[in-house]
Amino acid sequence: MLSEFVSADIFLRFTNVDGVYDKDPRKFKDAKKLHKISHEDLLAIVEDTKAVAGVNTVIDPLAAKILKRSNIKTIVCGKEELSNLKAVIEGKHKGTEIS
Image 1 (spheres, rainbow, N blue to C red):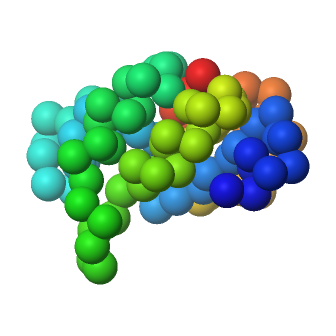
Image 2 (image 1 turned 135 degrees about the vertical axis):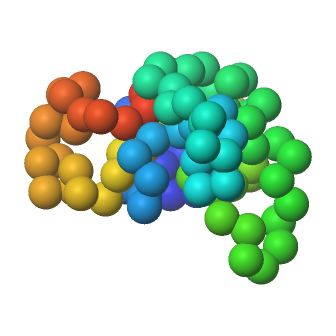
């Protein structure tokens, strides 16, 4: 992953959901958004995801392992927050912070 290669301090992931949830919010109405989690928490959520075509996860299991290994702070936000990049980096976002 490029973030690890360049020794990035932060990795920003903008996606069609507004953060990391405890389960797929498109399938489960009771899914809860997680505002701040550890890399271990993220791995527990995505580790059973199979790497096959059509599977859609916020962060794939391999990327989650690399981010944990490199201890890169990660922010997952909805793509609508991309227009306010500075605020997202400063922690003023509606997404999930992973560290």
